[in-house]
Length: 251
Ligand code: NDP
Image (cartoon, rainbow, N blue to C red; front, top):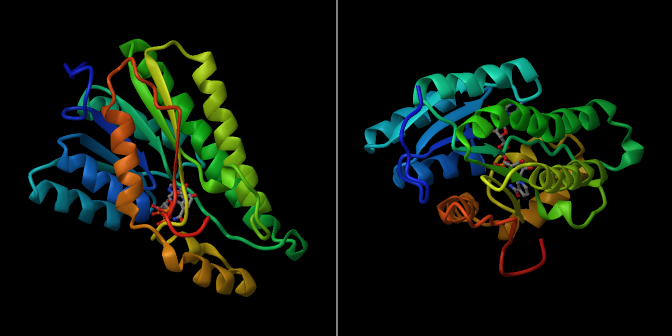
């Protein structure tokens, strides 16, 4: 089954969002649904996703959700297949899920490094390989990979986090070069944004630093607007990279 969809714009496009249970993913889902996109939401906290689907539906939008652990390639495949079977297409894959347990390297938090590598890098790769064949078959599609200002500069305590985001930037560039022009690849790099991201920091020194650092945080809808902009461009326009950070400061 393949539904008809306008080539440009947002209305009717099927947009998959990983990590949609809070923060940027949740705000993006609400915004895109307001613009008549059909959103398919994935994350591990299904009760949050179900509430979001209910809110979008009550407001007249269309949304579906499915439990998703992006670190599991087979689970990602099932998520993308669920979207394809339910909605008939996959127009946009927003690889947004991420974690950021910051600490100095000397703290030796190997499990946290591995979790960042698994979610932030492998999760994005899994999203790409699961959605790419469908987009190639459709002869259209768009990946929106969420990196960070940390994909451009490294800060203390964030060596591994930044490394994962540099990787997302490299993977996005490589994907753009390897795919045909009917597949668009956009990297969206937020600066400090209101979300639950800092909750994953176990190191007390890094938590205290982050509380101060995040005072000027952007609302998550600011990143949703950047994603909306990239999707709304005509099919022959590929917005490669967007960095969106608070006007005040450099974070
Ligand atoms: P949140 O912590 O609010 O959201 C992160 C999302 O990722 C949650 O929905 C969480 O859902 C999901 N997630 C985490 N692990 C997994 C997993 N294994 N499988 C599926 N989903 C997972 O933070 P943000 O909204 O800020 O983060 C979104 C993206 O933005 C991340 O990639 C982050 O690195 C990036 N970013 C954020 C910035 C900020 O200042 N907020 C700045 C720069 C980049 P669940 O736990 O339910 O699975």
